[in-house]
Structures are given as structure tokens and as C-alpha cells.
Amino acid sequence: MLAALLVLGVLALPGQRAGTPAKGRVLVLGVDGGTWDVIVPMIEAGELPALAGLYRRGVHGILKTRPPVISPVVWTTMFTGKLPAEHGVLNWKTSHSTHRQVKAAWNIASDAGLRSHVYNVPGSWPPEQVNGRMVSGFPLSGSTIGGSTGEVYDLSLADPSDGNRIFKDNETAIRGAARGLEPGQWSDWFDVGALRKPALEGRMRVRKLAPDRIYATPFYRSDSGLVVTWPEELAEELRAELGQAYIAEGPGWSRHAEPDTPAFLAEHLAQVSRLQSGAAEFSIADDWQLFIYVHTLVDRVSHPYWAYMRPDDYEGMDAEKARRYSEAVPDAYRETDRQLGRLLAEIDDDVYVVVVSDHGFKSSRNRSLLIGTHDFDGIYLVAGPGIEPGDGPETNIEDVAPTLLYLLGLPGAADMVGKVFAPVVDSLGGERLKVASYEDLQRPGNDQPVDKSTWEQLRSLGYVTGDPPSRANEAGQAR
Image 1 (cartoon, rainbow, N blue to C red):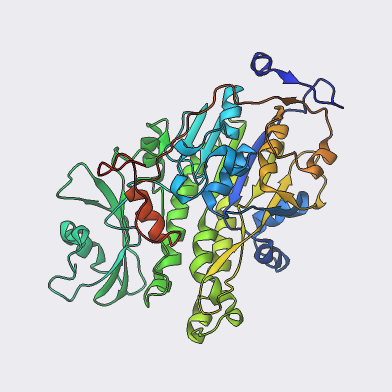
Image 2: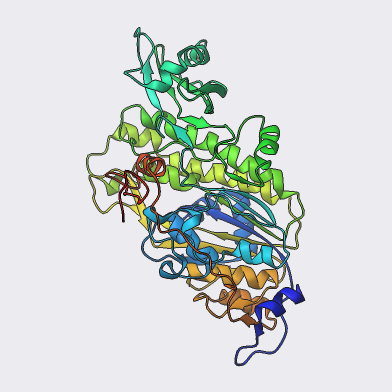
């Protein structure tokens, strides 16, 4: 550790003395889209026991995000302590890890010899080499085949596929999985393939909607050509642990207004989230100093179901749908709390737990648009040894990375715009140092926009519209 800090050139800034804060282990739990507006009333009602326990023993407050409120941009700002113009992840077109031009907290921790596990952080694909394990988050290129939302089929028709290649290639498997299901039941996961591209393998499941109607999930790729883990062999370890291939990205929600969608979308999003948190559970008992896991279920459910929870904020609301799906968003919080609770059960009392969200949620200002939209007020919570519980002041997303470094016992960086959360410093004290910069070798970055496959995933998620951006190496076009 000392050698690493000497190479970086530790500077005692004005008013500071030599030394570093006490070293700790840090577990970061991201709740994508989490808002106190939902969490606090549920805690007061006796729900969300995992988050409630942290809330009562930690300091908590508003984590203010900055425009653009786009998940990969915001999470990158959080974990670098730098603003988009410097870190390079500016928008959906530049939302892969190769677009990031500076080090994230896991790179800094790895360089200092600290074992770091990173799971499901938006903007972390393709995976990076770390001193530990990484499982990339969205957006990914090529993680699904034939669309990212799944399809509804009428199996009473001789050819229900309507030209869909995935159904044609896997009709026997799909019909077989649906056979014997009652309406509302899901099949187990089953293997699928692409006849024209035999190297592609995948997994699907189906839900019976009516005697002759089913929903078939997207074709989620499971072949070795889709690399989402570091090291690569972690993918096979997760397959053995989970009993099936890891699913890196759930279904899109852009078709939320279709008649069948509310009945199955939230259920399937929860199914995928269980695989993702199961993967994180695989590593939680390992030896690590920094563990980061971003849980995305709340965000994915809040977009299409928020209006049913707040029907009075909208016009043209179907009262029956509002009654039937009013608990979809609270259920997403309940499921998230259960899954995070399993992770928390595996850690010791001396671990610092940091809970953050990239943004909150609110009702759309367009009262006829029945979706939830991003709010600038996210959440933060820090619990652990010596942290004084209670309400904390508002702070900013760029303050997360300096706070993590402080809790890990590493110096901050003078070229980070963020600062350590004030209530954490007030609770723990200690002498703080800063290095001039951790950017001893500037990352080259990538000036090419995301590819067509990634754009299709983002479009199915409802985040973008229109044609994919042009790339210099596609169709001979120059930028």
C-alpha cells in the first residue's frame, strides 16, 4: 500500500497532516431509481426490514443527481468522482466502459492491492480486469437475439410466429415448455438456439396467459461469445452456482402499454433480478475490501408501473388496471429488500454499508403519459462502525467515490470534484490526505458510439428512439 501511494505522490493539502483514515471494508448497494418517497413510508409501515435496519443505524439523506439523468452517466460520475465532460460517458451513445476515460473506484482500489468485486453497474460493459471479479451491467451489445422484449404468441394458429425467426427456430421447445402450464404459470428456463448461427446459444422461459396464448421471454444469450465477466471463467462458475446461465439484462419495458404486458413484465423482471443477485451472493462470502452491486429492479418496474401506484396524478387511467397493479412498484421494493437482505446477512458488523441510487422517481408531468420518470433526488445511506445515525444533509453524486476511498483508507484525489460525505467525516474524523491524481496513465477512451445491437436494447428499454448512431467503421461512413 505504501509503495503504491508513494508512486502516486501523496500530497498533504493545506490544513492537513500526514496520515490516512482507518482502513475498512466497504459494501456498496445500489438501488437504481430508489426514492425515499417510497422507502420511508414502507419502513414506517413495518416493511423493508433490511433497508429499515440500515436506516435506523446509519446516516441518510438526499443524493442529488445532475443532468443528464441517464443511468450509465450517473453511475460513472458516482464511481469516478468526476463530471461527464471529464469521465467521458456523456449519453446513451457513449455508455460503454470503453467510453470512460478515467479510473473508477474499483480501478483505484485494485491498483492499491485491494480485492474488489463489481456486479451489475450500468456502464461497465465490456468487463474490465480488476483485482477481483466483475460482472458487467447494461447496456450490453448482443445480449439478446431477435429483440429485447419477448413476444406474445397464439398457439392455436398453425404458424403463430408472424415471421419471428426465434419462434421458428425453437417452436418445438417453446410449445413443449408451454404444454401443461395453467394460465398464470411460468415454465422453467430452457435452452434455445439460432439455426442460422449455430454458435449462438440461449435461454428462455414462457408464461401461459390463456389456454392458447403465451408470453415467450427474449432469447437471452448464454454462449461463450458474450463476455460479461472478469475473469471469463467466472461465467461457468456462476452457471454452476445458479443452476443455469447468468442473465445479464432483463426484458425491455418500452411496450408497457400493450394489453398483456402488465400481467407478466414485473414478474419476469423479478425473475431476472434473482439470478443477478444470486450471482452477487456467490462472491459475498469471498475475501474482499470493496464490493459493489447495483440492483436495477426498482428502476425497471417504476417506469411502466408508477402510474398505477399514483393514479390521481394521471388522466385516462384504467381504474381496474390501477387497482390490479397498484402494488407492482412496492413489490419491487419488497423483492429488492429481500435480495439485499441476503447479502447483508453474509457480512460482518465491521463492514461499512453504503446505499445509493442514481436518481429517484416521480409522476410524469405529461398526465396522459402513463409512466414514471426520473427525479433528481436520489438516496444515500451510510452505516457501519462509528457512523452516527440520523438525517444527513443533501449531498451530490460526485461525492460517492471520495467517500468510498475515505472508508477504504485510501487518499482522495485533488482532481476529483467530489468530496467526502460531511456526516461521515464528522462521525469518523481521522486525518485525510489527497493525491494529486490517480490518473497516472490516462485511459484512451473510445470515440465510437454504441453499436446497433446495444441501441436496439436501449430502444426496447424505452430509453432511446430513432435509428442507431452511425459509426466510422460501419458502411464505410466517416465521422
